Image 1 (cartoon, rainbow, N blue to C red):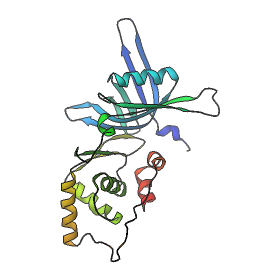
Image 2 (spheres, one colour):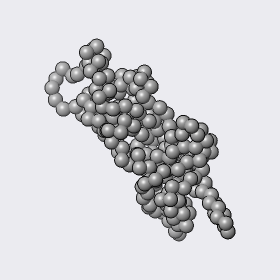
Image 3 (cartoon, rainbow, N blue to C red):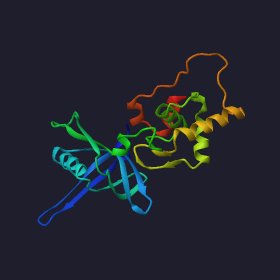
Image 4 (cartoon, rainbow, N blue to C red):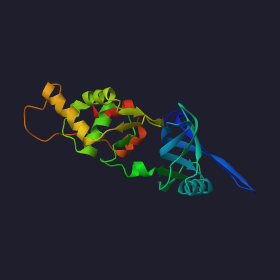
Length: 229
């Protein structure tokens, strides 16, 4: 945890009315965003996680519900205007620190698209880019048959078909995967026929590695690969 604060970003909220101007900045520990193709200085936020005081968190929660915009910045992410769009979901909690009498407040916001992610949308937002994590996630979401060892091969297919795109991220290395189950099954079928993908000789259940939500939210893409190895 040494120098953990250096990995944090910031969320700035600014609202002007005829009589007042409200502005403040919160610590941002996680962010996933997608730059709008026709507006490079704006992005659609899929996930935000911020820490602050009671009043600030309440204001951000209200702003999310009204589809207002924020400015996001962080390591590797230049300041950019974002919103979670309509029907975003939020959840709030508390973080108690030993040197504070009052707990900090924590808010997580998730876009409607990410919250309702399904196999039929053709768009899957993932928190990490490692081949193992991407393959395991897509296999579970789409019900794809296969082996954990096929991760690198499948990732190469995604890259060859330009079906995996990097997203803006703070506290992670998120990606967007485009494609439907039918296309993925077609690639797998070709891989099996060509001999690039093989099944084990002995019959039996396929054991997929387990990765907890805590591990996903606290490790980097390289750490995910090691955890699944």
